[in-house]
Amino acid sequence: MIRVLLADDHSIVRAGLRSLIEDTGQMQVVVEASDGHEAIRQALEVRPDVAVIDISMPGMDGLEVINQLKAQLPELPVLVLTMHEEEQYVVRTISAGAKGYITKRSAPEQLVKAIEQVHRGGHYLSQEAAELLALRVARGERGQSPLDRLSNREIQVLRALALGRTNREIADNYHISVKTVDTYRFRLLKKLNLRNNADISRFAIQHGLIEA
Image: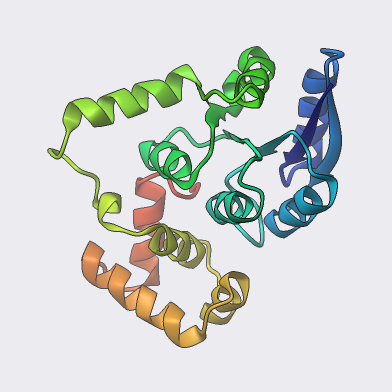
């Protein structure tokens, strides 16, 4: 029996995913989490065999969750299950240590196989994610996205600013100072040639980091 942690901020989505997982008779969702902080706490307490994590969750986003899980539970395979199909998300989550990446639209057909694969120690990419990585390799250094110049933390701050969070909220969420958030914001404006937070929001929507 494969013991699964399921982290997603939508209860209806979690219910559907739980059914997909437990209908196999070979897997069990032993714990659910609705945000990143809870996902980490539950993982440390329950020690599941596989963690299925959404990227876009309140409080702490999926990239930070992956970083912390890999630091504290390095043997725990993390499978990213998300609505995002943008290249940056695929590249950064795999680089952070995720063992798999599938989209929610492919979940009915691929979720069970993906969990089995990462539980065995392998990797699993949905067709969409694999194609994005292949295109990136084929493109090489030409036609790089502006996001390629940003660190993971800069991406996180960019998303938070685009979502309208205050510098204090961002600082509290990532356990950094407000001054550090100000520094990240200044760097983002300079690197991306933007003027203000409204420009940041438009940029984030244009590049698929947040929904319009």
